[in-house]
Each structure stands twice: as C-alpha cells, then as structure tokens.
Image (tube, rainbow, N blue to C red; front, side, top):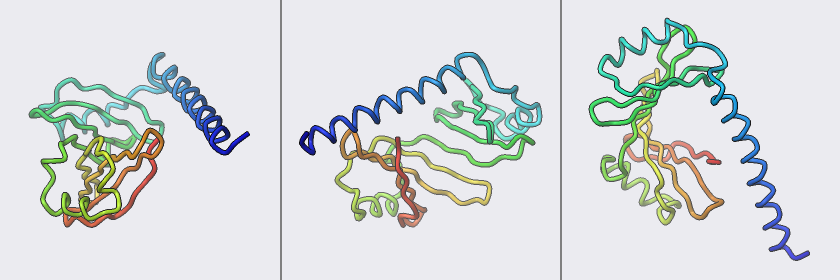
Length: 159
C-alpha cells in the first residue's frame, strides 16, 4: 500500500472516530442536561447580562456555558458551579479587529490560511485575547490567540 493510500485510510479512520465521539456527546445533549443549571449561575448571568436574548445553556461538566445575543452580537459566557464568571467570548468579524491584531495576523506564518471565525475573549483576570480560527485545508485547523497589541500568544489545534 502506498503512503498516499495509507494516509487516506488513516484520515477516514480519524473522521469516523471523531464522528463517533460527536455522536455520543450529541446523544447526551439530546436527552437533556447532565445536571440542572444551579440558581447561583443563572442569577449571576442575569446580573451580568440583564439584556440577554435567546439564551441557551450547556453543562460542560467543568463549567456552565450560556449562548445568547445582546445588542446585535452573539456571545458565549462561562460560569463555575458557584456562579463565578470565568470568561466571555464575543463573536466578531475579522474586519472589526483593531489594526494591531490584523497586522499581527498578516505578519504571522498563518497569513495565507483561511480565516473561519473570530472571537474576542475576556477572562476573569481581565485579559482580552482575540481567537482566530484558521484553516489551510480540511485537515489543518488552528486557533490563534492574539493580544490587543497583535502579538501571537498561543496557538492550539482545532478538531
């Protein structure tokens, strides 16, 4: 078997495995939450985001996540089980990034990759990072995290 055939076979097996794992997790969410959302979490959410619309909750086992819209933007926010806010991610367009972040991306080794999504992530320690999802082909996907000054702080694989 040639290298190309082995690689294609490996990629098919990888896709089947990922689909199987996703099916398991989809099945869990289809039958409801693993546990109910604590009132401390929902109260903290209402305090922090009183104008939130179209709120949906997820139990991520280590935290609780709410997806919602507010003032025309889409957000994800995470709280711990005691209602302490952990982070907020705001969906945005690449063009809305500040010039330093756009310049940092253009100077990175990923500048020829396709931008698939951008989020502004603010964490409990008041650090703001801009997460850019990039894709080179159907197999190579990465999350790039830039600070406000346009410095690439970290990168992570995306499934």
